[in-house]
Length: 357
Image (tube, rainbow, N blue to C red):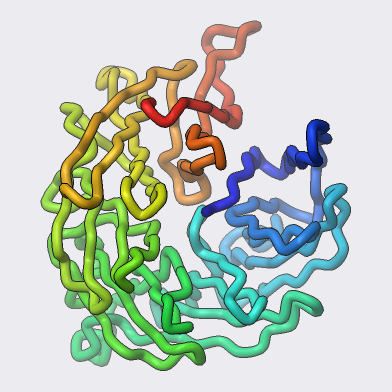
């Protein structure tokens, strides 16, 4: 089950429960001078590993990335950054870092080198020292087109999970045929425990894939935009689509998306929709799917604050299932400044609903 935290700029909020008591605090973290944006958090015992993006302000075209190691009180233990003036590193928020079965950190992203395009990369990192153990860079899914002189290459990993056999399933986005300014399509890549490719499955009608979850039969679930509709999709262990269910029937459905599994029987999928097309204002959609019958049980929408706006690369929607069965939805909302109705600002949002929405 994914652990969710809300981060606005670098406000790091913890709610740690011990028996009947709770401790809550906010901390502003400054791992490096410049701009820092948290994109993923994983936990091991009382330690938090935080994957973040780093922008050294004088070199605005060169974005780096780093991992912070933070104790249970929010104090930075150590920090490692990957940054240089010849590379631009990008990692997508929400699902791009995991702690493996071997208690080693794995994360995925992309590396943009001058005149070489965007290359998808898998990193393996020692959680004790934050040293890089190895990296693997992978070719564009359309290998023949990518080999042509002057090819426009875009190949980005977006999410990673460890498969039941100890390898990894990775989702990605690419530009078919290496054609510039074309619609990006999705794919799944299966690699073994040391990053060797086992298979790749491209999806020509899927245009969004930023989350993937394991199914008990060694297959996978993911939320996506499939044939221009927002769906929960089930694939087998080789990435072949077995079934899909539409989970957002609004007139103007929209990303971002997130998916969680309850007891191998149900899927919950969160997404958004545009409820005001004049001002492009969004709100939350939540759906529940019966896995055995492959049907949607219900779909509900929630207009929260002024605008549930999680549209940019560095913002994402979170969905988590609590032990009680209740659901937590997180994201960024755009609100009017109470002191100036012409001014908007952004806040982090946490919404709790019961198992029936």
